[in-house]
Image (cartoon, rainbow over all chains, first blue to last red; front, side):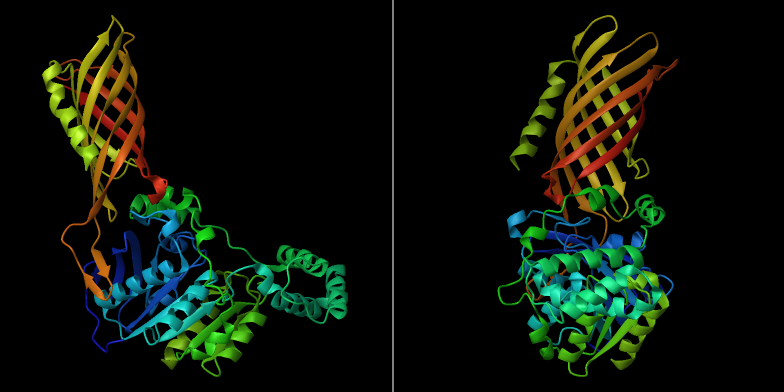
Length: 335
Length: 171
């Protein structure tokens, strides 16, 4: 990024930013929101989960609770992907593609660069957003300065790809809890002994049995945050966000967002990412487990640091906001 | 756009049919709290002692902060029943809405980022609503409350639904 002093812009009071603007690109109008403080020179753009999840609403409903943590030190920006949230435009469903999403992300980053001229630009992907944020960096090297991969889902395609790491996750969770006396843990432990590894194949009885265990683990252990409806209604009345559009529009994009053939698994390519990275996982998140995070750290050969949030699930930033903040702070310190 | 021209022609021709039987002004609240105003004219198509079929044309403007300034022109029938001094009705309108984004807007073409002065979009709209009112004494004829729902097309932009509430009077 350009080492230019940050500008004080409309929508800001001093260093504090509460900003809303639109990015028009390739027939889409993408709303962007930014909150936080400009003082540190660091701007973090969130690539939210999904692909159908509305990015901006994640803050309003409390799934990205950075107001008292990251927003105290950095500017955090969210945007709605085309086809989600309050995004508008003259495009059709068939215009949706992975390449289009990456192009839109590039447009949003260019505008953020133009509007704030940050000293450091960090991409923060959550879940599916880790795939697009990784793909973006592979296709546009040097455009961002750091990467946060929270609940990393760098495998995009059939869930087959997740079978081996989810097997390892279930075995680790069960092994840690055998002393509890719960029959579930001993059942999983026996399953793991019988299947020292599982191939990335969907239609097998072993995979089906494993998924049953994963559901049981989720029921017993994984914290799932409740939506902050008050915050959402406040955003509507307050009133920059259209609740009805954001929450009631049908998911008409996910089926069009498919990985380029041969790039469903980005692990083999991650060695090419030449930026510091923070890989943050939840201890009991069976969807994108720590075992997958460890593979990313290994693939990035010393440039990535892993943080496992104790007791955390898929939204570990809600489960332990301070632990999440510490992981991001440590990354920014390395930039 | 063709639909705009057609609607404009309809609106322009309407006053020639007859003198309006209704002239109304109202506060128009999008989602109640996004402020706006509306003006409406109505022409009687058929009437009996207590019921009437009125052709209405209406212009609305409202401000959804940080989202858009919306300008709407619409036309459609209203069925009205007047039991005593009360007034009840239902209406169905169709028209066009022009929206101007109320936030800074940047246009990105390749490597180029620029900020146009005005940016927005246009939609076809359908509006359905009901009205409840009562006769007044004095210069104003009737007060009216008209809750309504508007749907913008094409809807791939979203559900594109606007809930509105008008609080107004007929003159």
